Length: 135
Ligand SMILES: [Zn+2]
Ligand SMILES: [Zn+2]
Figure 1 (cartoon, helix red, strand yellow):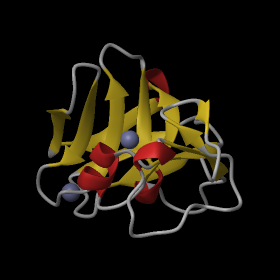
Figure 2: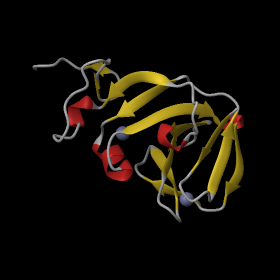
Figure 3: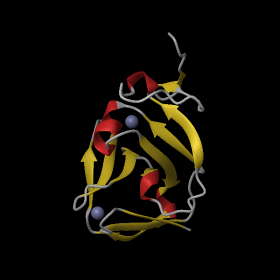
Figure 4: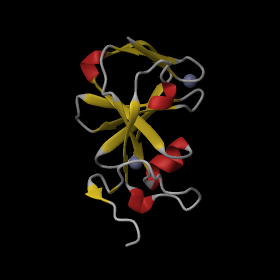
């Protein structure tokens, strides 16, 4: 059982089962809302139990998705495609040991200019177009 919470504890949850890899999203929306690259794992909605969601707020970030955050402390918590039965979960809010391992980097085509490209990972432009360095 994995435990997650925001910094103030207003949102507190447990996860029975989740994806074992972390996806790093470099898109401008994720960078704005998280402060940098957003690292997400994923779990089915039925596998997430909220002990507290008093301060959980949702922001409709596009026609396709909404983002969950704590309205009290501002922690980035969730990403959810509209109508999906799963949650993307910000890896930073999970308590160690998470058992998570690094996965792919996506939206490299819109990464920030203030940090280098990862050199040890699979890179994609957009969600799933292989990124060719030097193009
Ligand atoms: Zn909070
Ligand atoms: Zn993103």
